[in-house]
Image 1 (cartoon, rainbow, N blue to C red):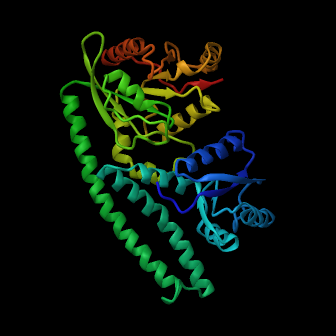
Image 2 (cartoon, rainbow, N blue to C red):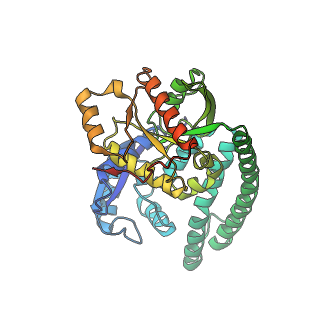
Length: 381
């Protein structure tokens, strides 16, 4: 992928929250950037309760960043959080290089992965919704300072013109995506009339969801790749369970920490595949720095999209890549509702896939029999 930016400096804010590990967030941001062929060559951290309203980090840290930019040949600065329009404008002016925030990085990856017409529409909608509030703030700031863009008159006029254009585009994109949503809704209605259950595969990005679908369905044509957000379009496959019943398995877009709300909203039609499922397979990658924290992110995202009450099976994937004692430690740290057990598998090596299919069949039979399953969100030790 061609990219004019290749050396990044990270600006990381440690808000000293117990639920956020700044190192994990920074490492993940570096991995996100690597997927855009951008290498992180430096990092500046600051402990603050809240961001500086003008420059994200304090002025001293911004000066330090400017020195590192010159020293390391940095051509892009990336902040490990969301930026306000004022912060974005000020940092670009003070540092003299391009500045991105974390949500924009995630959206850039989505943009690079979007191949179908539907995915492209969804990403374009998210980008427009992301850009509009930034333009509103920058237009106001340019008006107050009497600034302009190039030689084309007052800044506010140009910003307002572009903002209105984006708002019209949002309306157009939403109409097109509503048609997509209706088609998907009709498809799900046909499935329900045929009395066929749907199992949605969810989990953190790059946890092996597509590989699991390939193992369950024996479909070698399913695209799998060791990269973030390899799947943007849901793939549905019909699978025969051990008892002879057929079910549909749906692979979905991966979740991640601080998933931009614009993307969640734009991918509504896709995520409804999760909401309408009879059962969820929540895939865990034990190779994550903190698998249980990633699992918490998945649970929070499921709540956000209204899917928290759907019964689920926890699938610990990639067991061929860890030691038995590591797997046992992870399983012991999982505290699941009564009657639930995590199923360890290797989708790549086809280990325990038959056991997982039996568990799926058992869970669906309980659901079909209207036996209430205990589906409260499990606690993490």
